Image 1 (cartoon, helix red, strand yellow):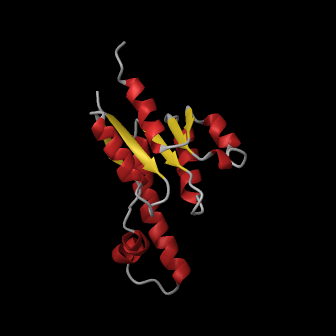
Image 2 (tube, rainbow, N blue to C red):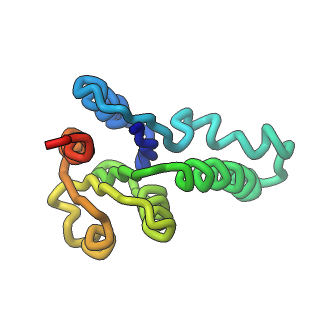
Amino acid sequence: MELNVYLAGEIHSAWRQDLKEAAKNRNLPLHFTGPMENHDRSDDIGEEILGKMPTSILKDEAASSINNLRTQILLQKADVVIALFGETYKQWNSAMDSATAIALQKPLILIRPEKLHHPLKELANKAQVVVETPEQAIQALSYVFEEE
């Protein structure tokens, strides 16, 4: 059995790579997907496909529609979603992807520091597992593969 894991969350730190390395070190049969991690590509994809937009708002709208297409397809194909909520960046996409995972009835592992317990309490209550680190998320997935 191989699981498709969608990694939702900010794209500015190495948390995805750390999580993937932890999975590799445990020899877990996981395939990872997630949002476009190249920020410029993500911002420019709408104009690349639809042409130059007259305003920055329309440029954002065009990019958003293409990025939402990608996210919707990959979330629907996911067996499980891991969503990281960190302290450094605003986490709008993490919240949206987590809510979408819940609506699609996808198992959700929420990674959030204890400091964010209160603002994320309702979302955490809908997740299957809430942890504080990517390593703990991998430990939870590792348990899925244990036979005894």
